[in-house]
Amino acid sequence: GPLGRVEVICQAKRSPMSVRLGSGDFTYDALDGWEKLPEGIRLIESPGVAVDSEDRVYVLTRNVEHPVMVFDREGGFLTSFGQGHFSNRTHGAFAGPDDSLYFTDDGSHTITKFSSDGELLLTLGIAGKPSKMWGGEPFNRPTHAAVSPNTGHIFVSDGYGNSRVHKYTADGELLMSWGESGVDAGQFIRPHNIAIDANSQVYIADRECHRIQIFDPEATNVLRFHTMQTS
Image 1 (cartoon, rainbow, N blue to C red):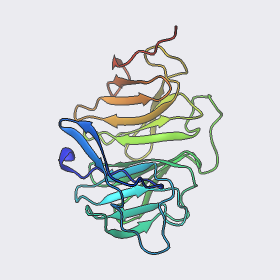
Image 2 (image 1 turned 90 degrees about the horizontal axis):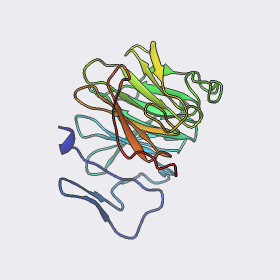
Image 3 (image 1 turned 60 degrees about the horizontal axis):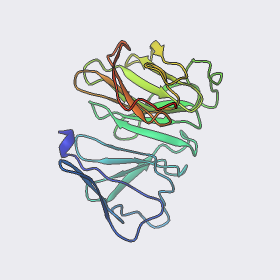
Image 4 (image 1 turned 30 degrees about the vertical axis):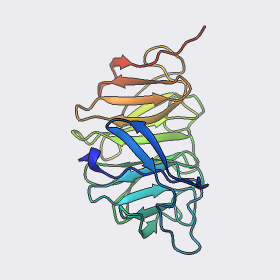
């Protein structure tokens, strides 16, 4: 299950030793030198990591020659893919229930879906053609995407140039969007990451608001954490 999967933190600048983070059942080691890269290949910045059901680790990098690097659970380099499909502003990675990979690129304003062997299956958005900033339409510098394990719907947080969340069918048809700029329930300043649980509840992390809001799949505000202090 997901809790048994390997969690890794890859850093372009390595610290001199490993660091343990978290507590209790949620304790993780940031392993210095975990990745074993071939000569001449560098991670550069690595804003997203996803792990599939076979414990293959997909590291989304800002190395445009090797945008997605694939490792085994021990850090052995397997392959890379995605050259020509990403800018140098990649942002988020997600492994779907069927091991499809979803990558968010805030530089090209797209979300791309790949098979686990690197075949491009779907693109949301048009590369290099952002929507109007703060206009509400997808996408203006999206940040992350996640998939419902029950319906296959794709949810996208959008992002640096919008204060919105978009919901798509598995085939890429836009179903709805919600959110606007602000600090009240259902509003966002910087929707930065997204996750979906086994009950299809949608978790939106808002970086500038320092909070997580939880919605049902139809965007009814269910619960929010860490109400922003405005005084």
